[in-house]
Length: 196
Image 1: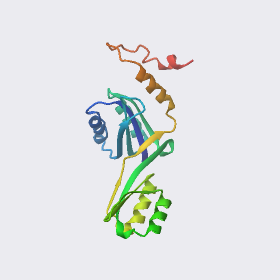
Image 2: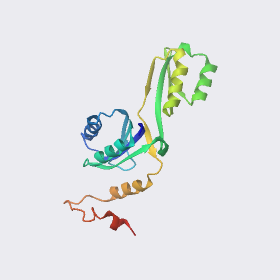
Image 3: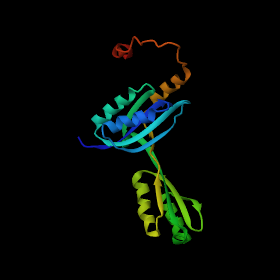
Image 4: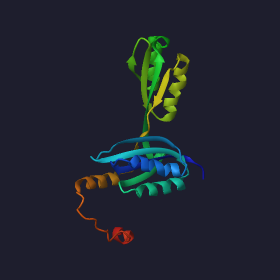
């Protein structure tokens, strides 16, 4: 089995120290995190981690299970690039006098779906969103003009088929936690409970 790019999506309660504990799960297995984004989700109080790694599926499956064992984690998914819609934001700083020829700039911007966010005498900053290959292409186009600086954000991704969990999240938002912990008597009987 060969390694491929996977996106791990983790829904959590927002707790201090959780990011550190999740990172340790990766570092213990010597897995490099290519990209990490954390943001609020569509439900107040629930955060969403989007983590990109290159690994074999068997390892990713174990990782997701390990992450779900963390108390504050509600759900962890892993997906291939085909199962998600994803984007990254990239910014490029170039010397203004090098690209000052207006026609050239406008064509460039149109061709790569970029826009100028800052134009100063000494430099101009462009911004674009897209997938890695698209934002990389613009680097090679701008390099001849003296690319001063380049930065790319972490991936943001939406799972194409995660509507079921979205509904559960909404339910989670409506239920207030009880005072005492009650052991779920149906925990080991999933097949019986969920078969009609």
